Every structure is written in structure tokens, then in C-alpha cells.
Image (cartoon, rainbow, N blue to C red; front, side):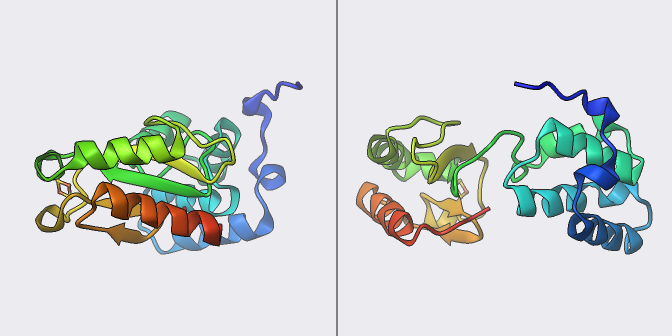
Length: 174
Ligand code: FES
């Protein structure tokens, strides 16, 4: 496979006109171009599914923000994916209220149904399973988020049911 030297990436060739326009729009409404970093990452992820090293470099080139700084933002923000992910990314809450209300059995059911562990993607590319800090649904725990949807009061059965429905729909969630 050809190796690309990412330092030679020119954003004008790497990013599409649509991506550049959307990022420039975000930059224009921020006080600094630096502040548009997270939105730029979201724009590119929305088009490409995840943020590769090449994408990161291109955004850094466009915004004139150091790559290490963007990398820090991408690492901190857990909805930015630095590796390829499935069509549906499951963010399963791994915090205390969910632990106290049956997370372990929900997690076991999901793992068994999808045959993957945390950090993995199913062979058919439909699901990636990630753990997440509190999703803010502690009074309705256990909870998970897939795309923009929050699912609460999960049981092993309801969690698998949700995944079955999404698998049939083939829904794409970021
Ligand atoms: S602890 Fe799981 S939603 Fe808050």
C-alpha cells in the first residue's frame, strides 16, 4: 500500500469544496480560527465517517492550527472518531448509576449479540461498541446513545431489540 507523507497534504486538494466551505463558515462565526477546531472535525467526520491522520493534517493546514492542538481536541471529544467506525456507534454509559442499575447484564447481552468487545466493530461494519462517561440519564439508567438517539431504562432484552431494529434499518448514525 502506498504510504502518504501527511506533511505534504494540501487541504485544497484533500478536502472537498463543500467541506472547506462548511469549515470556513464555522471559522467565520468564531472569534479565532483555532476555536473552529471542533466544528471542523465534526464537518469532516460527517462526510467521511471518521478522522484519519490525513484529515487531521488537512484541517490543521486549513485553519492554521497546530496539529497537536487539534489532536488534543479530537482525543478529548469522544464523539470524534480517530479510527474507522461502524454505521452505528454505540456509546454505552459506563458510569456509576448505570453500573448500579444493571449495566453489566446489558453489556453482556450486547457483546454476545454483536460478538464484539469495547472498541471493536462488527464484521458487517454495522456497529461499533464504545464505553462512555455519564450520558446525563442517570435517573433513567442504564443508558446508551447511538447517533443522536438516547436509549434509557435498558434491559438486556431491550438493548438487543434496539440493535436488531437498527440492523434492519441499516441506519447510519454518526
Ligand atoms: S451514570 Fe449512566 S447516564 Fe449517568
